[in-house]
Image (cartoon, rainbow, N blue to C red; front, top):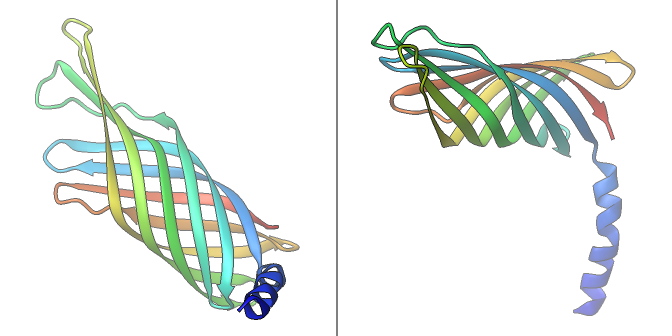
Length: 180
């Protein structure tokens, strides 16, 4: 048994280095639409890590942190202003891809976990009520990348993140990916 396992373990680094890996950074622009309440915008910075499993399929992980948000309109009452914004997210995807020359079209299918903060400010007395929450579940999207500089790629993605019964959470991400 040791004669079989040892060569397999020793050949693993050869197999891993034969596949391409890349890392990237992106700016994410999020829209959170809460049914019967309103729409909120937020932005994040994210890092991505991709590993080519086979020529037409990557595995991808994205990690992000919130960097900004817009103030919503008034909620039900002219004295209340609410804010909902993404504070962090972790996503893991399978990424089937199709390449034509310097362009790559791909899909994203996986799981996401999103953390959000909520603030409601009462303008009549200046009080602020804060809360937080998280959503997780199936996530999907599409993307297009272009090899703009040698092996480095610019990309744009649209992602629909954990589908909910009374909310819609989507993002558009713009970024750069470099081979490792």
